[in-house]
Image (cartoon, rainbow, N blue to C red; front, side):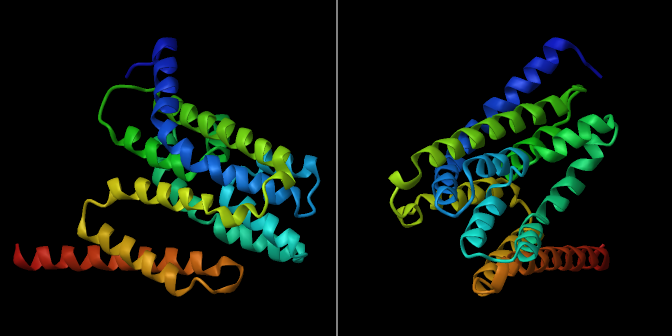
Length: 241
């Protein structure tokens, strides 16, 4: 194993560099969040604090909409919790590569873990080499995403009312396109393909469910279908062996 200041710096910079294409997807989303938050009833400080301490784009976007609709706090908390449950799956996937780290590292990386960072980091962890500084790669990706998100949320908040009806601009299409781009490299087997297609279909069928519960339904449907397909293929292989 190798661990040196130069290798740490190299991994950190590589993580930032490999995340650059994904920053574009967060740019319009951050702008829209900031613009909507400015007119939702949240104060300037509260909006910035949410970006700094929550750091979860989809949850922030949903939360400001619910705040604007004067939704009870309990419903806002429950909804954002459900939306962010996918991070449990990300953490479970990365845990084997991070369990040896001190708690201070795991807490920091858990807070900064995003969809984009997971997508680029998991490929780095799965690469077979002698580097013992791969967590610095994740840190570099996380810092790039964090700074990018704070910047564009702040810009959107400053523009505020100068962006008329920001949601109607269609800029938020960049986020789903980014997610699709992140998912495609993982679709290498039939069970994964079935999981992706099932989750996509379920998300469309449950689009009108209240409080974004369709996201949770789609996630469980995708996981269940993928595991079922994997077990059936394994059983078939054992029978023919």
